[in-house]
Image (tube, rainbow, N blue to C red; front, side):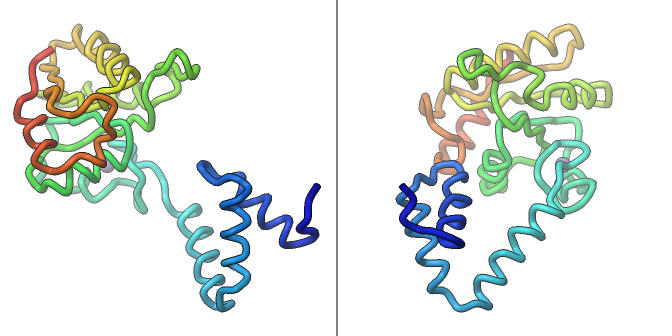
Length: 198
Ligand code: ZN
């Protein structure tokens, strides 16, 4: 039974559709929102709409960005012949925070998971293969050390093999099951430096 009729009920229902937000959290957020000053709520809702409308995938690396090409892909000082493959834009941000990687990225937006029904066509692999037709010297596979991440790494290395492009995998210094974004910069750099050829 819905104790919150009308607009309150609708707000709770909408919030509960977001990932990781159950009914209880949705209720808490809804109560907080109705207690906020109207201009703050207007700013929040405007940001939501504007972000959704203007953020898109970079035509090169597929990361989320405001323009056709992201700042990394449009930077001529970056080494465009080295591509690091990551699962999410958050992983990209983790490597960028180290400030030590000068290549470019490719964001898959997921990992292959037969159990969850995520196949190679569900992540941005075709876009990666298209980029490999250009001048690429090395592909660094930096997917997570989870079952899905390893499956994806193996799949990609098999795809790239026939092209003869050097393919490496970041070292196992990254804890198994660890999300790249939660790992400190030193560990990330060590994993990058200790990468091995596949
Ligand atoms: Zn890009």
